[in-house]
Length: 137
Image (cartoon, rainbow, N blue to C red; front, top):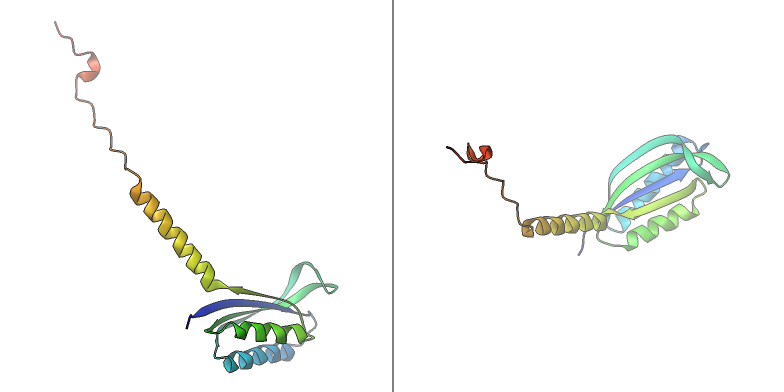
């Protein structure tokens, strides 16, 4: 099976108590474990200003999760749980292994192109006296 990695960021309402945010994270951890996935990292970034209003809020509590799994169904389940949670106002999931694979492919292509390109030979230094015109009487 193909190993997949994801970044998941969700934003909770600014007035959400810390216990509630922890409860959301533990719910996601349980759902991830049910589907055979693993949460590699959890970071709570605290309350920050939003780029634009979301559900009439100007700020929110950001939480970041790094996930790994062999099933795409895990993400669907996590997104379903985030969608129905009252504390969560916005979320975003990105499959990062596809992006890394694309970056490796572009790097390899660039290296092949550079290997095919002929290298310019360094100009040989001119012999002394050649600059003077070479005619002597």
